[in-house]
Image (cartoon, rainbow, N blue to C red):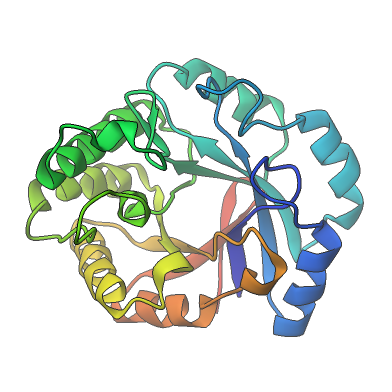
Length: 255
């Protein structure tokens, strides 16, 4: 099993040391793919970017069949070519594409939600995700499709498939058509409602032609490394999807 989504100190929102992550992975007998944040043109200078040379220079000595080096690429419509160039220039094993900002507003903050109903905010989020996915045909997996639910300013933040089916289907259909995996992100797996809603989306991904998923904890601290990865595998099985990890940008099937 691989945890293909975690952050160490090269991400500006994490202080985890790679040896801590490796120790936890050894305890769990799992592999890791490091995915440091790279959100080019983030509104706050120097935030959510990292020194690529230092990253590979420092972590190459740890790189092996159970420790691979990737990137979580922030998807934005105004920096597609910069993102593409980054993935072509550096020897990443895995490129996870994620939407963290919509219309240059961070979903973590308040600004994006001001003056919008939940339906308006979630619709725009999914529309923007589709816009990004259309142009980022070079990513390996689409990260945490339910990311907005973590931070939205509404009483019930769940993204119900039936309510947003048309928009979700467009995203899933395009990812499936391009052979892009869908991430099963376990960050919210302690929430039974979230798991139920996510499973509906992953089953729909299969119906629309999707066949593979990556599994990731989104860990920023040692105790979260590998969190609920086994549950992600079980969900994948229920949805007829095959878990993979990426090595040298090629999918490897997990058992």
